[in-house]
Amino acid sequence: MAERVVIQGIGGIGGVIAGALLNAGLRPVLVTNNPEITAAIRANGLRVTSRDRVTHVRPDVFTTLADAAGPFDAAYLMMKALGVVDAATETARYLAPDGYVVTFQNGIVEDAVGAAIGIERVVSASVGWNGIMHRAGEYERTTPGHTFAGELDGHVTPRVERLAAALRHVGPVTLSTNMRGVLWSKLAINCTVNSVGALTGETLGELLADPRVRRIFLRTYSEVVDTAEAHGIALERIAANPKLLYLRNDAGPLVRYAKDLIARMLGRKYKNARSSTLQSLERGRKTEVDFLNGYVCAAAQKVGVPTPVNTALTHMIKEIEDGARAIARTNVSDLVRQL
Image 1 (cartoon, rainbow, N blue to C red):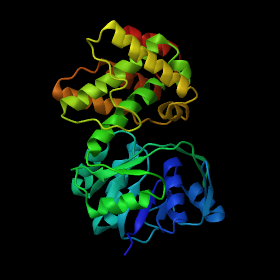
Image 2 (image 1 turned 45 degrees about the horizontal axis):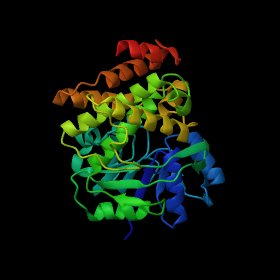
Image 3 (image 1 turned 120 degrees about the horizontal axis):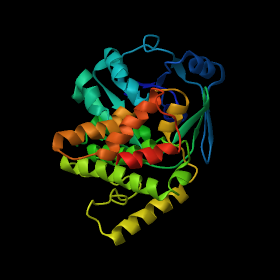
């Protein structure tokens, strides 16, 4: 018998995944937590555009969990990291006795969710592609890429095999026995691209044209790698070698030149990319920085790893959130002075 699944949070990623599962004949129940999105999907269906197809489906969609008819065997949690613990706590009341949640957030939220509902009820997934919501009920998958899924303890269980089978309707899935390594590899990318990318309002290409930013970029990434390794975590390859942007503190000039060149090439390849943290700030919303750079700083403190760049970035982004600092090019100079 197929699992009864609820997908919570029908934004860019949630909408793309929901559309693919429904198009494959599965029947997840959608919970939007947004009456405007619920109304739009009920009126017009859910439409997903990708490079090779357009999917148009009509799901069972509700605004709240209380409106949907539980219990559920699995809940895919697609909201921002800021709301995931509260969502998991509420969701636990609507799960079957052996039901579980799947976390899809940027940053590392799994232990916080596990503390709230029991770590045995948490399965982890990490999305290596991008999806956006153009308007309520209309979505687009904008990049290719893998999804990673696995148990936090590394075992391959029937439930994670069922999860992987469902997600393969969306695209390639890697069933990982080292999800913590996957999560930290993605964390290193997000701490660097999203947080450094939020300081000036510029695209990644514009930012990485500045040699000062490239140095900050490499140092941010390297602090995350040092912290992960101090905790005994082996980083996993996601899109590239996780050590590609890693720069040792004692690296010589030739290595520093090579890493700077890689950062410049990255800026050229993704020249139009804009930070999701920046987009949150521009909308006047709180960011996920506590689950990104802030999480790294807290983890580093436990093992004595210095993280001056991630600490400074966390403080600066919080100042922007609070209205005490503007998004401006001068933030780069301020950060360089602090370091």
